[in-house]
Image 1 (tube, rainbow over the protein chains, first blue to last red):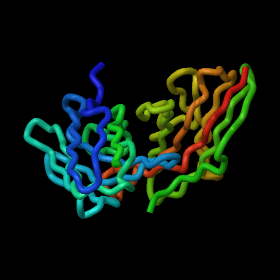
Image 2: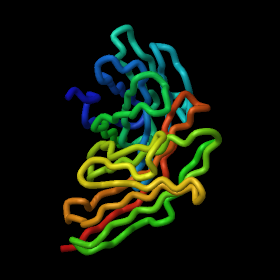
Image 3: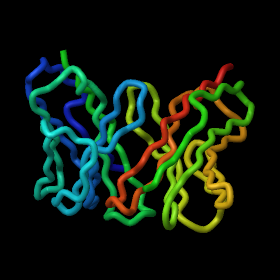
Length: 114
Length: 114
């Protein structure tokens, strides 16, 4: 079965640089979520989109932005990178916002800021 | 606001013995509860969920979870643990007041010894 696809899987950036992460949700899933997981921590919600519109916003820094495109893929743009942005970034998707629907996660994108 | 708590940072169990990972929740309205597993440097894999109905939910890889409304618990169980079950386990609740994002517990590291 098709899963959530994230790219790149790993990237290394220097401080103050910009990074873009891409996410391709499971086909026919209309909701996308972005999470950040620091070392030894639980995933923290950043932002979500429903039918290409931002639906919720969590602890996402102002330096970060995201959008969902007409084909439902999503991109997380991170600028002025800081050492503390080093983390595993997850994208997840689900069918609508019905509580019983499962949210499926991608393998994540490892960002290292040096 | 919805939240879950995992009281144990780590659970140690010998292979072949029963495994239990504890989770308690606090929600307003109907609870939509999930368990995910994370292997080292990997994404979050869905194990099982409780929406409604039977209090005992069966999931992937022989795992099951028992929903207890009076104790507001949703403990994950496996009758006979395998070394390959060693991983990080997250309990999560869908926050339907916030477009269905998942709120995770802190995670419990399971170590199964041969």
